[in-house]
Image 1 (cartoon, rainbow, N blue to C red):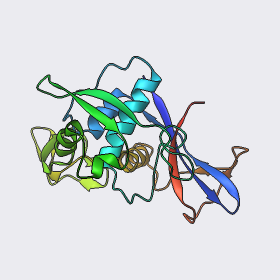
Image 2: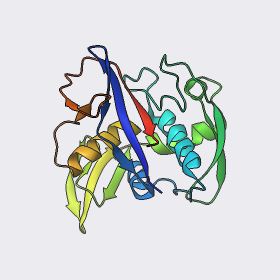
Image 3: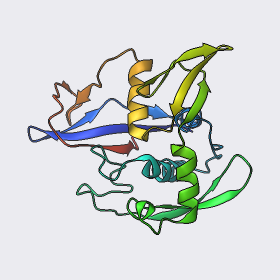
Length: 198
């Protein structure tokens, strides 16, 4: 299953949309550093919920680039869609995770969120098939794999954007206006990300 994700911003009175970035199960596994199994998604909504819940656990409370808008957040950063979901761990146990931006960070963080957040944000050495993980570079190479030191799961949109740019051999995302005309964007607007259902 493939989903498209775009970044959006308002600049000079116009809504701009970035290049579409694809995400599938293989890319999710890389983003999560193979620390949990990727489920077989029943439909696009189940995949969107999975990405959203895990993104919220790795995204700082004060994140500059928030999302997904229109699925979890409103454009004014209000929360419009809280939910619960089951996530499997590598040992086969299932935990319940609450998709909620602020509750997971409080003292009353649900136990499932604590467990999963600790797994995702644990800084440890990793061996990956890719020479760059998000903005992190490898420290050495061993048995054909790239070795990373003290690596934890990066925020979803940062990982996805950098992965897209690296694979497309680009330095910057392209931005388009409502007529799908490529425009210059200087990074002067507040950005957010959305699932592109087109």
